[in-house]
Image (cartoon, rainbow, N blue to C red; front, top):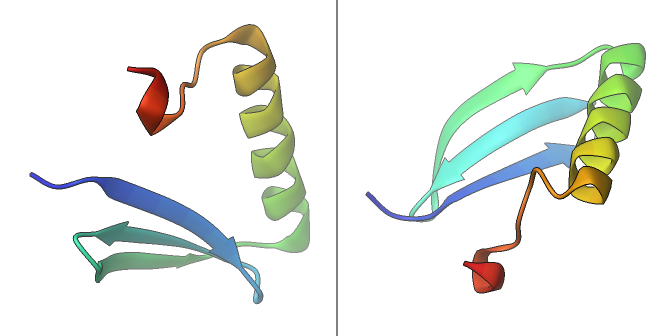
Amino acid sequence: MGMILVTVRPGPALHVWQDGQQLAAIPLTPSAALCLAADLLRAVALGNIYMENER
């Protein structure tokens, strides 16, 4: 299994990619996009998410 990349793009929509192939595109409301961003920032600040080069 290759690396998975998740992006939030205009729409807004959450896109899930693996090995250069899009696996899913999930439409988000503007409120959901903001909540997702806030949750991700909180998780990074708490050290619950790491960057690929930090393994």
